[in-house]
Length: 270
Image (cartoon, rainbow, N blue to C red; front, side, top):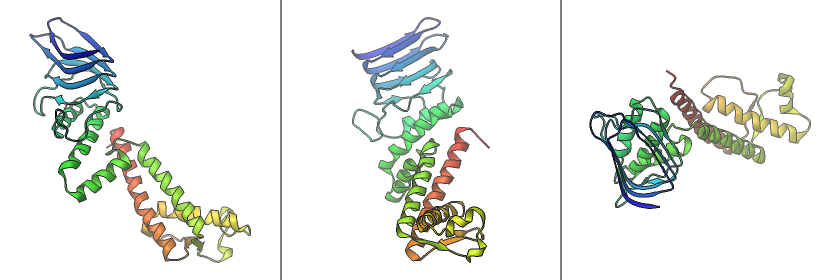
């Protein structure tokens, strides 16, 4: 169903509006008089322009669909929202300036500000990610490089799963590389190894090779670039193995740092 324009003027004390599988050119919600805010639920709906007026909407739930443009009060003015807000990550918003749609990041900044004022960090993080993607088009190449890296690794601090997946993937890739190259060797005499450490010098060469690869990768995970002065049982065999381990430690440290920041941000830890 295609609707050119919906203008909802609230003349009742309460209104629950639900839109499902619609195509709407413009959706305006405004309030007249000293009336209660109303609830708006939008599902799988295409909206060319969404206009939000301050002090209008109570509960707001949007899932799926597309929103091409947003007109929202700027920071420092009244918040359009007052109730529970749910914004699905599956809603499609423009991330490049497009004629007829969003031209820059400011609408996303406005939405983010209002959601943070409600202490709704999940919804705010979605619009922070959209803001960062939109700003790639007006930034320097070096800033864009870090922008893209930050987005890929942790979705701009909004994802816990992404840095965890990157950390696990990098660990696997480095371990396989060290194993395939046989780039790890023991750093001490055989009598210095005991218990589980004996796997590192096992007579079974394949077992020892796997154990050494895993140990070397793990040691560069917990002790990146060897900044902590600890005794290593396994060391890189040569410069290529050292280079692989060093590169791995840089990226794994970045992933781990972003994981901690994402956990801190998600659960609002001080």
